[in-house]
Image (cartoon, rainbow, N blue to C red; front, side, top):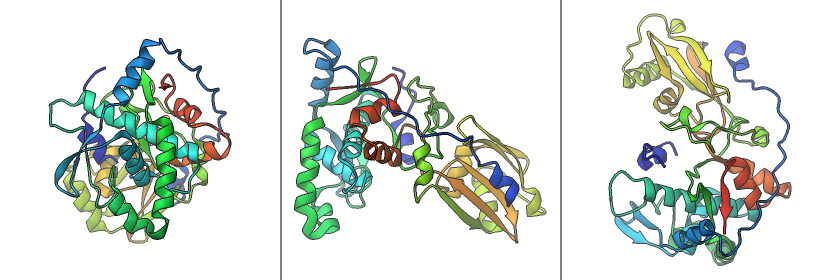
Length: 329
């Protein structure tokens, strides 16, 4: 597998009437989850390889304590899931997240461009990427022990499972809520991966975090544009030009001043929840409406919840959002 994706880059992306209409996506019904993949036989070489890799202890650099931490697989899965999903979400959604987190960590290890001595950089103190029991005790209080025991039991069931593509850990990235359709990897990062070309995720439209409208002053937009190398002058009503949306409904390019900028770059500069957005100058301010929350690639966490509530298993959830991959245990 090519090594053109930097894990650090992936982590950082760990987000009036006329422009609003541009956000409307084609109607789509809830997709049907695929049937579970057949269980591999004990002599399946890919299964054996997956179990061997999964058994290795995750190695993280924890900014919360300023040191490298080597964890058991169980502790990593529990701490990662606790950062990414509410503990009262369905079992299968949490287990899908656990497998995705585990696989993502291994992908970063295997595709690092240099040996930095750890797989991922996290911050246990603020719950970024992974957290420990001490932080969870402060968050959960008297419910901590019961919550930990539940997550530990779920982790034990999937500790040896990885999401594989051609026998290797897949780039099992994830985000909170899509805009109703997940995004292709090459629209956000450098590489077009066959299992990350986007799928329907219509459930996400029912999330409380689906749509958000925010306002920016003229100076705020000018400063954001300056970060992207664009100087804005004159009437603010002329600053925003045409916008091109990709097939999934995320902004591919937008004209700001005399430059054509990538939607992902504008999202980062304005600190928007999503690259599915529309900008309008209205009432002496810039009004920006976004749909979705996060980069939009891979597993939609809200979609995983909805699928699990509808009866899908963690395996079905993963193999739906990462078509062509196999959850091997």
